[in-house]
Structure formats: structure tokens, C-alpha cells
Image (cartoon, rainbow, N blue to C red; front, side, top):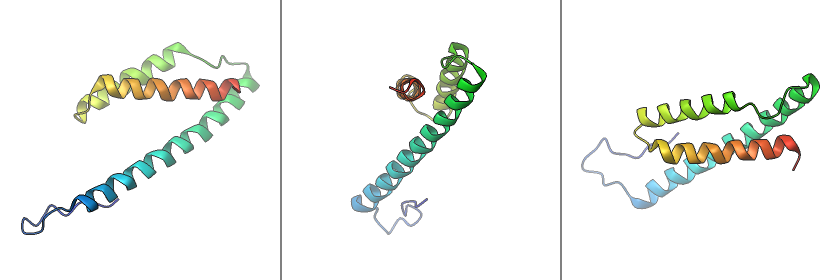
Length: 99
């Protein structure tokens, strides 16, 4: 992944360069969300075949606890990260239910 040139104090960081980096991160996030969705589809197929409930609250609770902890370690707001992941989990359930 590209990084802004901050190692040379005589070279100012350009706003356009930073925006380009942010755009690249956004694209990577979208690709990761698409990959996650593909995996969720596979999980749903396995759960259907093995008659496992689509929603397992203990698994969701563990995911949320883990992302909150990791968010804190990374200097991010645990509340915001939890909100984001709850939306991701909701979308996963929507996909698994075929809605």
C-alpha cells in the first residue's frame, strides 16, 4: 500500500496525494467487504447443510468484543467500530436469510 512521503521534512505532503491514499484504502475496504460477503455465502451454505442456526449470538458477541478491543489498541473509537461491525453483521444475516 502507498504511504505519504513524510520522511523528508523538505518535501511537503500534498493534499491530493493524501486523498489518493485515502481513495486506495477505501477501495481496499470495499474489496475486503466483498470478500467477506462471499465467505458469508459459503458459511450460509454449510449452515443450511448441517442444520446450524444462521444466527449464533455468542459468536456475534465474541466478534464485537474482539473488534472493540482491537479498536482500542489501534487508537480508534470502540463505539464507532462496534457500530460499523454491527452493520456488517446485520448485512451478513440479511445475505444468509436470502433477503
